Image (cartoon, rainbow, N blue to C red; front, side, top):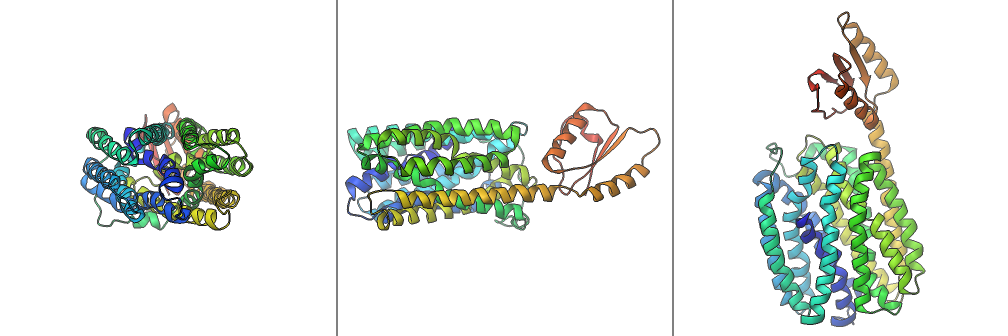
Length: 452
């Protein structure tokens, strides 16, 4: 959780710097140009995650994390001496993103490795650190900027990153040693439609998500607020992001990660478009940040859960790095497109077209998630005819008097039924036919027989 604060805190609080650059330091520079700084953070972090994930699996989580600590610290210090936009792109943008990628690779996989029953909650609590980081990064950055200026804000954040993440990295322990492999890309995972549907969902979600984070401060100024009002709105957004990520983790453990994700994406569109487009004062913006924070960012906390559940047996850091590459591409496309739309079509006086662009891509992400839900149901299930045929042949092979049960696993529901049956010890042997194996290590696991 703590390292997530320092990985995503700068991104979630970048609106403070974005508002300052757009309205004070570079007021005559197009928003599309300034958006490169923030978008390069997420793009570098996620696109490189495919390679840093492979390094973390090969050389160890702690080794990767310490590289990230050093690079992130250097990025902050160098950015504090930057005076041109291109310098900030390279330091605050690219270099910090590279360092964050080395930190993200092991951090993103730890909770999913250590928890199974409450994996959604554990991952939600862990990733909630990104929103907690956004909260205090926002308040701290604005406060330091008001007193000491933006240069010292960057330097102090760099010093904090070095010492705090340096200590937290000592606690990185892998529960399961990673299987050795020769490729950076996990080819078997990339051959599955499940992987590409997750990638499409992430690309679309990240294309639409960052609009409010980057432009809420400028929106506050347009309705008569100040730079400090923009920071307060961003703080509210991060506070409720924290609550939302933990809350959705609990919900995901009950109704499933994909179902929770689909619901939250649809609700995000319903909330974002009317409240942002029609806002004429600060009050609707506070309502928007509250609801958007509670609901919108679930795709960040739930995707590690989904990947861990449906890519069992694959190196988690590598598969997550592969899917995160599409998150980075989506962040880049979204940020640059939104900046261009704000300049050309909204003419820096409103956000109507920017909001429509954001809403369309979040809705497209929901459609991809619906496709993922349907595909997993079909992929994990056997037809009724297949089940009866296999069950009949299996019963014939049973010895007289043996308490046996033969099941055809029907997706996630069937898997949960199997786990409860095994725990009850009601049968001498349970045979399950499923397209993909069920991960069960509980009581009486020796009685479980799995066949494809």
